[in-house]
Length: 202
Image (cartoon, rainbow, N blue to C red; front, side):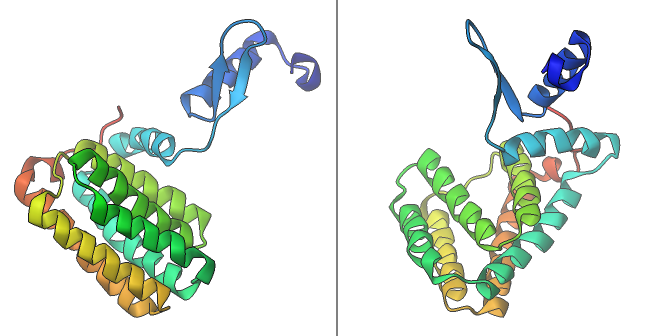
């Protein structure tokens, strides 16, 4: 790389360090090691975005407002751009949620559902940004659905999936907005202090 880009060793080292901090590469140690391209992660994107959010004094209530706009929009796009080849995968994700018996598994199932809907929107920018906001919020919030609440969320997921599969964009958007609003209300009731906190860099 020094020869290819005709740069000093210090410049190359600093460039690689920046890429590593942003989660775009990882440094493989030992003989034959060096920089390895990483899989793009919304979690890394979200983490770096929090640095800007902290400087701009952005509160969690503003992050939530953005999610309430973006996630219903992605559900609408998923229905409008519905590809029948995605149907089986979407149904499988919903069933996985219904089968989840513990909190950790339920959280994975919930993340899988929202990730699938985002990917079906057909917009990579919206998918990355919206999932990044979701990662930031869920990492800071300790509120999770349990018992009968979990059953309620599973039914909501199934209804949203049905609307997407039917190509009913208006219904998919409405159901996702209702679903997200219920979750936000639950967090606000159980963790009222969180909503007024600045989204800080961690």
